[in-house]
Image (cartoon, rainbow, N blue to C red; front, side):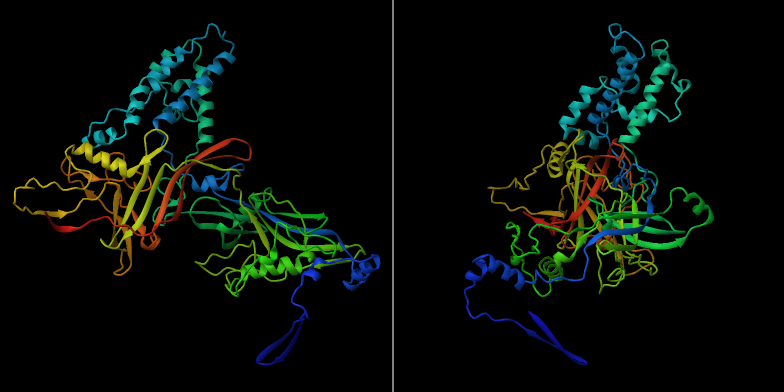
Length: 612
């Protein structure tokens, strides 16, 4: 196939020459039949396999890279950026607190026996009675009518609370009681007097070791963007984290401003502002700053399944049929992939180089040495695309779209220090924000709420049970019973406002401060029409309880940007995640994940209705 181009500015025309076969059936040609050795030699000559070229094969490749470490505030040398970014305050249910207390008692038993005490003379019930008395759960029976009704809707949690009262140790209470510099003199007088003689120092050491293990396994977020100390931005329903690439006398900000939870990778980050280091920062980075890495490796041909073979008598992988890859004129990505796979695949080499995680590697140059000893400097085919939407490049961070314009970084690769093999638990909380066009409102529907043990339960079912507890005579099926039915008398009933389930939390539009057109969504409150007078319905999930204390008192309003709730809605899930750090220690954190919703919903909220 040949291409002939003719230029006539400003009009450019191409003429394409295509060979035409005399026969329609290509079965004989595709069979590639052979006759004798001379035929095979002729075939090789026909495909140019006997023609030599004055070109050598690549045998060595020398890479020069500047590797700059990326420092994320709050992340240690073995921590993952994802656990630091997603970590939220953990609400430990009673069952988990009891298990943590059992871990403490097991550590205490091991330490006592290791201290030289005869196992036959050791009675573990002594320490258990002491810790049960001083560090038992503080869960008391609810007194408020609303709290009593809510407690009755979760019978399993109530039975567990009754069963564990006085029979377990609250591991979270022990952690909160133990300061990092705990001494025997800090023990409460009654607690110190109850300990066996000469065991106070041993108990102190066990408490300090338990505190270190607890803080490492269940890290609580440090002070950050959110008032709770996490990187979660509740008004935008996303995470925001940033770090700095240090080295070369400059510091470049790398920010992930719109992370919605889940896998965190290089494409989650954008390039921010670049500034010069101060003298103090340069001195501090002298030991852990940027390094120049120069190494020589052997390049190997790039291979992948179904790749066309360079010789006629070689067979490709039949499991991959690249000929069936269909692409329209607008599918630029598919066209590029198919063109590379079918035309240029044999011309590429792979150069393997190791890069430490949590760093940015800037490729400064590649020198390829061939079999004749010639050295060729390989330069980038294109400059970094940066923020130019008409250009693109792979694995490069784009400058942040907001703020001052930044020059794109040279050819580079960022490997964030994320944790491998993260295990996700079942959602403990699930909320979906939907638009109700009939009521002209936005609702936050709680779909899953914590069950008080170590799982979740259906929020709609909990709402129905709550209504039954507050009004045993209420009809939860939605059927209106007419007491005059069959008497021939028609009765009408006026309803000021229809009822909405308690797991539907309203968000009402309010004006932004100082603006008359732009709006945002503010969490509202519905009043209960049954049960105690003048009670407000508060959300149960921590996703919606920002600014509400444990007594259901509103301390601060909660806003959500109006553009964060599209017509399709948005779903937020709260779950626990577990992984191992790079030093092998486990870490557990509470995270949220934001995904698209499933469309609009209808609450049935209406005013001034006549029913009968």
